[in-house]
Image (cartoon, rainbow, N blue to C red; front, top):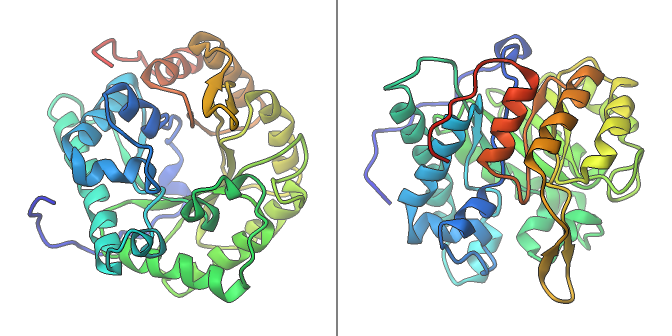
Length: 322
C-alpha cells in the first residue's frame, strides 16, 4: 500500500449535494478480469488491491473518461471477517478499505488535470452475504443475529469515516433486516451519509422476500440515507422496480443493474450477451420513469457507461480510451 497523506474525516453530504449526480461507473471486477487480473479468491476484486493497485486506478480512470460522475471504490468484498478467514488481522481489512479510497482519489485527481466537472467518490460496501462469498446476497438467508449484522457494518463504517470518500454506497442488500442494521450502524457515525441499494428477485420484492416499497418506506425516514435504489438485478426488472420505489420515497433513486447476462453456477460461467447500446436505451427509459442516478453492475464496462451518457444526453461523452 502506498504512503498517503493523513486522512481527513468524511465530509457531510445531503441530498442537495448530489442533485447533479447522474451517471455511475460500471462493474469493477469485470474490468479487472479484462485487464488480466485473477479475482477467483474469496476477496474477489479486493485481491487486486494488494496485487495490482495501479490496475484499479486505471479502471477508475477509464470510467471517468467514459462519462461517469461517480466512481465506487474497489472495496465491496472487504471486511475483517473475510480477511480473518485468510489468516490476516482486522487491521489488514481496514488498510485495504483506506487504500481503495486513496486509489479512487488518485484517479479523480488525475482526471481533473483535464476536466473540472464534479466527480463523487462512493465507498463501496457489500452486504454480509458478500463476505460469505457463496452468493448469499441474492437470497439473504443468513444464519446470524441482528447484532451480528450491526457489528459487521459498524466496524467498516468506522474505517470509512476516516477517509476522503464523499459518501458510502451500501450495495446488494438483500433484506429489510439488513437495511435496518445498516441504518443502526450509520447512527453510530452521524457524519456518514450514503445510499442503500437492494438486489431484487422480481418486479416487487427484494431477494429475501420483503416488498421493495416497504424497504423504501423505512429508508424514507432516515436522514443519513441520501438515495435508495437497486443494483445487481436483471435490467428487465428495473422499470417496474422504479415504480415500486416511487410509491414510498421522495429520495433520489439510483439504479445500476447487471448487463443482462446470466450466471451459470454449475459451470461457473456467464451466459447470454451484453448489448451496451441497448443498455443505454434502457437507461433513457429508467431516467424518464424517475431514476436520477444510473450506472451498471456486473458485466458492464466503460462502453455501457458511455452509452448511458449518450442516451441521457447529459453531456458529450468523452471518446478517449476505455
